[in-house]
Amino acid sequence: MALAASTPRMPLVPKPTSGIGVPSRNWVVGMESWDMKPPGREPAHFLPRRPAESSRPVPPGCETIEEKGIMEPMPVIDCHGHVGAGFDERLLHQADQLGVDTLVLSNISMSMRWPDEAEIERRNAEMGQIVAAHPGRVEGYAYVNPRHRNALDVIRRGLEDQGLIGLKLWIATTIDDALVDPIAELAAEYNAPILAHTWDKVDTQLAHETRPANLENAARRHPDTTFIAAHMGGRVERGLPHFVGLPNVYVDTCGTLITAREVALTVERVGADHTLFGSDLEGGCLAVNVGKVLAADLDQADFDLVMGNTMHTILQGVRR
Image (cartoon, rainbow, N blue to C red; front, side, top):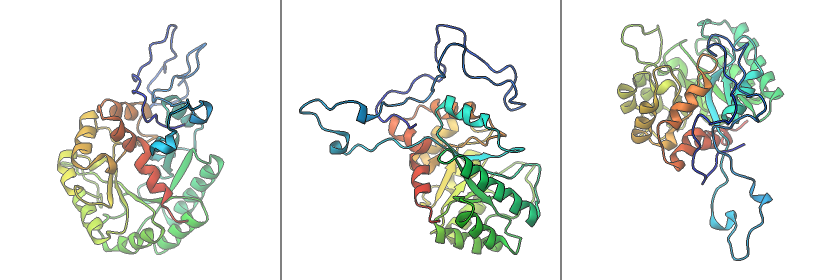
């Protein structure tokens, strides 16, 4: 499935002629009773789809897509999610309902701030198994703790043996710590992105939690490394100036404080080609995070870049 390149975007909520299934309780609390498929109807795709060109004959005298130089639409990619207590297959059902093709996940629980080496090895191996079981639908980041002596081996194993596509750094240390330098250099060798939790808080900053200024420092020190600043830096208007003009820094749209306004502002200041759709699954709701990009009222070209085209290009460049 892929975004339409020329069809106008459909409204977020379809208008069925019969009743539509709804969740009986908040998805963030629990998914046991979630059912987005209305009785007697096919699931509604909130992001439009274009029919396969091969199924439509080209009228005499008309150019083909290839002759016009129009690119085929890329998949819709959620660049930032997490595996919870095991992978729940219903996440893919939700993704199908919302027109999201690929989930890029890391297997690290927010309740586990300091996993030891053995726990990281186990979780990354499990992430690799999930990726292998869902080719094309799930991609994975290797979680890395820069304080561990085996950090570089974790990266090599994740990218070469476990089928993972990048690295996830959380709060083991700030991303501009010297401990991260060899990790950033190795990531550049693989052309693998580093997704870094980035949040600037008023009074509840966690120890070693990366702020936008930390990420700017790291990006300038490692211009050949691709960084993804999660959550747009938290306090978006304070964070964005640290990312503007850095070609190796991308920002993702996930976060409970991020709204359509912040998405539009980021596209305006950082550029659609450096803004990536993310949901923060399972801590965030996929539908809400799709909705705020739709509500940002971007033009079709920018919308396509944010929802997957740019992340697709990043993933295609990873050397494994």
